[in-house]
Length: 194
Image 1: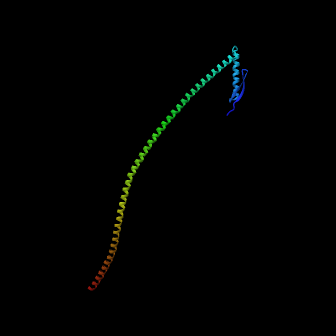
Image 2: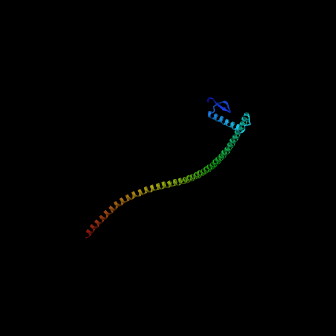
Image 3: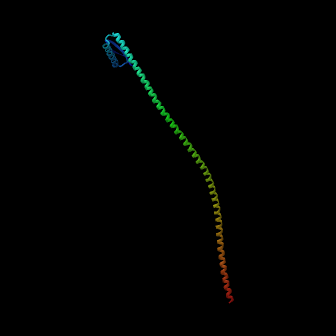
């Protein structure tokens, strides 16, 4: 806690002890100012008594104080109006930005819905293609089974042909042997006939 100090000043020849937490230089400057105003009043209005001069000084100081208060109030109001206008500008800018963001959000929401529809359409197409793929796979499986059946039939026929060829080879050998036997017999017969 600040300790109160006593500052001694002289105003119009009277000594005063001013106590408080105020800066000493400030108090002395105030005393000098009041002394200069009293001297000015004494010079400009020598017909006034000391009390009248002090009352006039108090009245002038109060007038100055009220004028400064009025200026200060006007300045506050002006600043308040300026501050309010600035805030209204900021609010307007923010509202505009919010509207812009809302529009962007709606556009993005629409884009998202469009994308979702495209994905749904793509999924539907894929589902249709999955059925086509399933059908094709079934057809390939059926054709493979048919192919395997043909291969089995081919192998059977090939085996039969190989057996038949072997049989034919043996028969041809027999036929050849028989032909050779017939020729030999014909030659013998022809020798007997001679």
